[in-house]
Image 1 (cartoon, rainbow, N blue to C red):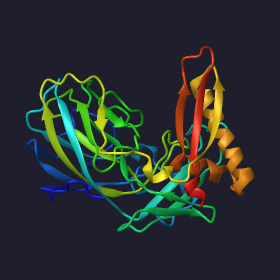
Image 2: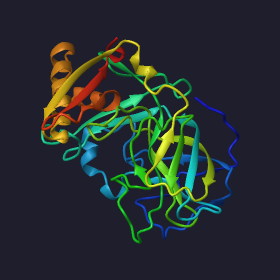
Image 3: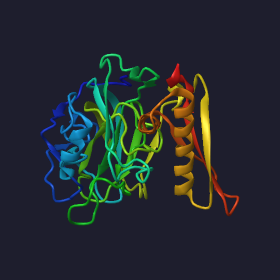
Image 4: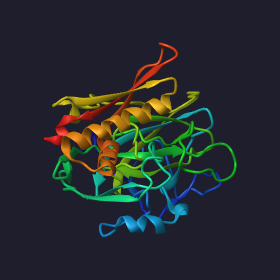
Length: 317
């Protein structure tokens, strides 16, 4: 998994984490551009879910301890208007993960009101496939769901919504080899990372991916005066090759509202998976979240837009 790896200068340990974005949080380390660090990232439950957890444990989770991020890191010379360059060198997965349907959360929260939990295990030294059930195996692609820098606005801000400085973007292509550029809004940038995933589909439709603690190796640099408005990134090559080889089942949602179109496309895929492959609806929903992709297929032919949901056939072999 390592791409252009270098030995990290030191490790930022899991105990050095925080909840929410706040530019008054003191940095746990100060580093010069060019440094390589290894971050220990806790899963998005902050360790509240374990390999022995059941769906009953979801009700007792402390919502104030969701999505911890390791950091923050002060990068010397970073000033507002610069871009922080984050080269993602390596992910070191743990072998444990979970996916949940959390009541009140997710694209189809109005349809799936009961808690559900699936525990994953995989070979951490060769994280290629992870079994979901007798019906399918999900190709893995580790990445960090939450990665960003502190916003300029004072006070504590929720880590749940993504922001112009990054944060909980849940972009599965922030994988090893990708370079991410983040707009700096405060001196030192104050970078943090967490919410690591072993795999996720574009859209993370049930609200969770394969949530999995793991270490991440990163290299930092700066572009002075970049005046970047929003995050951007570069990938080293193809981004879907691990799923493309057998083709896709695709369902659509069509109408005047993109959100409702997305709901329709996913609902239609759940119906298809249940009818054709014998999944329970909630299992199909969670499986869609970890390996299926929502795409805007058409947004110019007013008044109706088309959203498509791509489910990779390779999962069902």
